Image (cartoon, rainbow, N blue to C red; front, side):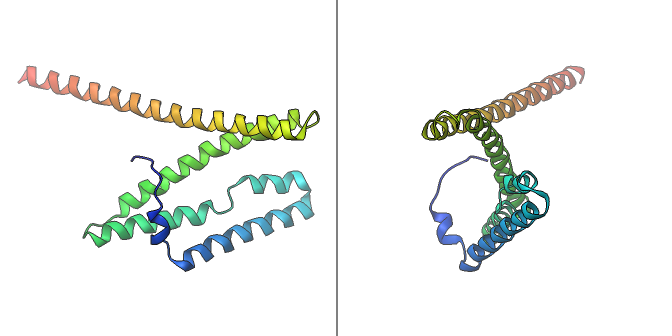
Length: 161
């Protein structure tokens, strides 16, 4: 599945889907606030680390893709699952970048706030893009290895026949 940017998905989204996203995001934020009040900011911060609207977004992405395939007469369940999985992979890579952002900011904030933000944003970008590149490279390498093994096993069978 190819990653691309398209504004057409904004037209496909129904008004209530935006409401669902905002409500779930708001509930996640309120829940993190309650946890912070009860158990301290460290515990509450762990819950804010989870992208607040990820669950709603994954569900909506899956339903959009499924509906698009159903309009063409296909089931679309597999395509919807793949699209949601791709979104989850992107969220995971962004979370790794978020960790780099937090670490760099924590180390540099005492010297300069603006410098800390600049360095942390740069760290986030480098780590997130590197994670994406590495995932893409490993996927293409594993696909290449599988196709080579399949070709060798096919070659072995045909020579026995």
